Length: 621
Image (cartoon, rainbow, N blue to C red):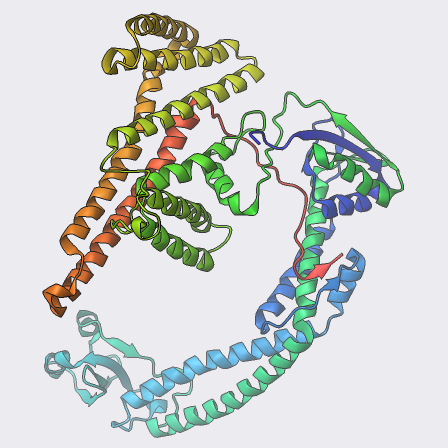
């Protein structure tokens, strides 16, 4: 439960002619994390087929992207040579690319038509012939001008020393079109264009031939023809999608699998007639690995169990799917090492408890559960938000549970309607007991962390550090007996004095054993006291909810208007209190685990197990 999956490093030897069979067998099995051997042998090198397979995949994927999605019928995986041959001869791909290119050209032309129509409408009243805007003697230019600038610009143009013809046409309430004609090379209007940041129309753009009415007629005709062509292309593409989408998606998946198999060649070593590879296998998968390779090579292979004490095995965590978000969160902090205790199970148990205590409200728990369930439906299952929401779901259930125990429903007490006098967790009447409960949590988790630290250090033969973990545990135990007897009368005088003496002895022993790290000894007590923040934030949330209920619980006795006002305030304030409580519950729950608990033993920095495997979606073996 507290260990990662046991691993075995293997070395596999097979004949060169069986290379492809072995790679396929390992790929299908998906149980070996392949590594490059450090032996002084010739590298096999990269496969020459990767380039061709990659080019075919890009081509197939491009065709898929152009098609409409259809239901996929799973096809049997083809051999590499047969797959390459089928894809190369699949003529529908050329048809798809040709139609898609034509559709793209039409859409580009539509953009040109839109611009031509815009220019024609802007100068419709001037009846200018766009074909003669740039002659040997005359230059004609058009601009879009803000209506508020028209008079100023018209005045400045009229002050030009050369003859300038100006025509202004209103486009809409904000803009007008400005047509300026002047003798070629004479009128200097560039400064005016820059000053007022005028947008100039391009009279040389496509389809701008003839007067505006002729342009709009041309645009209309072109659009009608394009619409008909796009309709025909759409029908043809729809038919191609029906006929080929499933087949192409299958080809793409097969090609990706074959590329993965070809890429693994860089991890291989070779001799004149044999191939060698190394990798890590979960010990429980060893027999399945031997059987898979034996079946495809008829026993022409050797698997050697390697002694890899000087190499850190990869980390594999096996947990139910609904608990995977906790693995994601711990790995986000740092991947557990395969040679140390995995703290994730403790995190899985403690974090929801801490969170639930700090929220302790059925209403807040139900509201947050519904919200995060919706979040998980709209987010990427591989992303941080999705996994954090998965943890939040379980924590919301914990908040509901502790809210029931403390009889809190948006601050209201409703248990009496279900179970008479049921409130085992009384935030107002038994604060001292809750404080002690959180301290007990702290003592238990810190001691557990030190015990884990002892096991990890002992396994790595760090005997002084291992011994310091035991003296630290003893220091905590004797210190709390001493404090409890001296300040709270929990123990008699003899026990208190004895505990104090032993606490001092354990303090000195821990300082000697830890050396330069002795300054961390003070954290043994302060980290435990940090757990009282559970009580602090939980009590704060409950008190605020109570005050909101006292001040803004809506009733009809004050009239309908005040009822609505109070209801709005009730909802808004409880929402804000819930958000603050959720934020603190998450932050403090993570802090208590990652800072107060993990630091007692957790090293992290493991290597995640990445088996040579694939996941089929559209094909079958």
